[in-house]
Image (cartoon, rainbow, N blue to C red):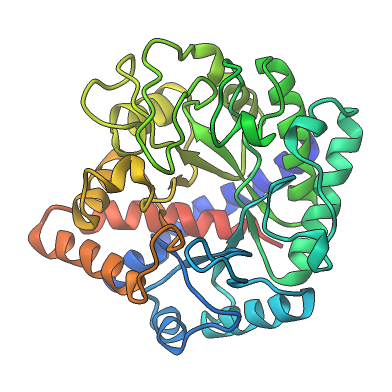
Length: 363
């Protein structure tokens, strides 16, 4: 694991030295780089392809099932999804991040019933030998890469601290209740993904393991139950120069910020994650359509707060509530923030450079 991380770190450092001399692109393309969006269809909609081609969308996320219609959404078979991803990447000139939630078990968008590699849930992997977990990550990553995916929004490194864990532990998504075990098994799985050329993501910072509510629907409050021990997997990863993403949760924690949920909090993202723990890579928000934040904030206000907090990629799954022009809405929201002076060009460039450094680690 250390050797793989060192190799990727070298690539990132080389780019870091090269980028200051490179001119940043237009404001439009820097905004586009920050937008991840989902869409409906086994083929890419023409308007989305046009947005990707024009640099107004920098990453996409695919789902197997449409949450509202209950039908196949983007993933039906290996040959179909390979063709879909190829069309998306062609529109981007090979510069697109294509993500999927392939955690294992119930949260595996690439399911065996449709011809994909079977991946057990994190709960089961938490009881396996670490070398076997790493091998599973490698096999899963190799499959994803062969299909055209370059980002896996996994592993979940939340530490189970409560027997009641809706949307997480109740679904087998947690490796266990020991911070050291979670770090060991989750990072082994990530190591396998990295070895296959797929970017992993640690989630959900700073920890949802004690949440009694599902953030898909409501904002969990972990003020009384959260512990700094839940940061252990992140600390372990950062000590090894973590080359992937960190996803920030929609969770309220008065210990960290009395006013804002973590995903929209400068104290949590720029403060705890970046300054205190030293992570300098790409931060992605959890899905900004989730009820935990969408019930309170409009798209423009969410974008402003997330960018101010320090998020680099704003994720809009477009599956909990489908909106055909969501990619356009997201782009226009950030463009208006820039035009009004709420978001500076320098701040946009900061995220763009982090995203470009992330892409440089792909092979």
